[in-house]
Image (cartoon, rainbow over all chains, first blue to last red; front, side, top):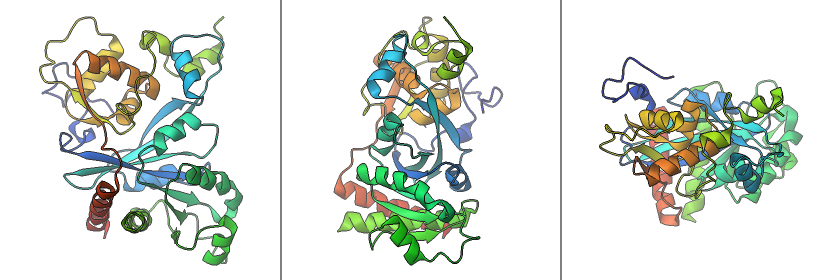
Length: 207
Length: 125
């Protein structure tokens, strides 16, 4: 990731390669959309298929905010662990750069969820039709944070018999919640799912 | 006192998180959100000598353009909380400039969503 050769204008030569930086960063507005779903549903694959940068991963302490602060201050005897959050970037225009954040939907990662959800435009919930029940807690969380969302059914190939109507009923979706199928490995397919979400968010914002 | 587990839990190599942050607490969330854009302040060629290696590293990376707080954490491998605290210190010292995302508002949302929709259709349509 770190280039030591192609950074002539950096005073110490340890800046990153130019492609990593946000184009036109001095005027860009950064926005984010969440890409959520249960473990191994394909979040990172989805983000990777449309991100202009190699998806990055970072970690956050899996504790309440106060405990995290205590740990950073060196208070001993608290058990903290970390969880990875993957994200990618897509420069939309000279004014807007879109970030896509993905993380597992466990309720106990509260701090991370608050970080991710705050200010998000909306959420795309990836669903595996073979593991629908695993998506319930994720949908609950997104609703709890008041985020508008669309459902993208990944891994659809092997399950053609599960109709959209059945899936809507199983997930207890509102009539206007978009449901799309996608192949998270495919750029066009992932982009189409994201487009469906954004169109829906725009409709909601215009009401 | 120190078990092998400690090293895994802290996830920052051999240095405990509170050593890197010099014991400082988490700064205001809004100012250093995940998608706050950060860059080095102009005139950083002459840097104070007292910066820690992590402060130095973040400042180096910031020197060539804008990155979000999340990207800085991703590139350095430091936990987000640690990056936020270091950046808060660097901001106070005038070494970096931060540009928090615009607060959500209905009209701004519509404009931004329309721009995102247009952009996606242009790129992938």
